[in-house]
Image (cartoon, rainbow, N blue to C red; front, top):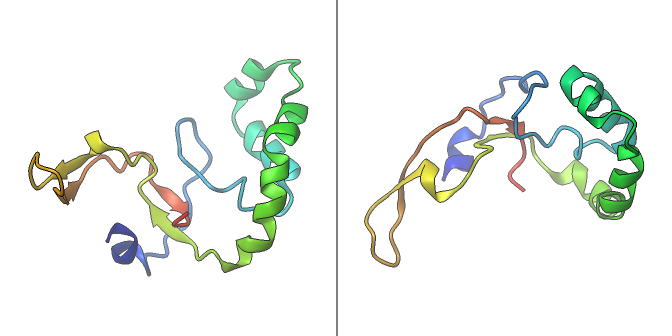
Length: 116
């Protein structure tokens, strides 16, 4: 329901910042270039990564999955999403099995991503 409600809300994505759930890097065909720009926009992250081979680590760990995702990207409609979806950010109709979400809280990590 949240995704249906946010459809048509076309505000631009938030700027890069710490603790923001974002699909920005993964939604780019050029994963390495997008990740480089994303990291460079966060000086403390650059410092924390230091001399580590994080580019190689990402290529090994995420690269194969991103290669499978890339052809599907054009079909993903941009959409504002919550970014921190877990049970404690939701108010429920009750404690019984089958309870439904009644309220969504804490949109602090929301961003323009997609509903994947």
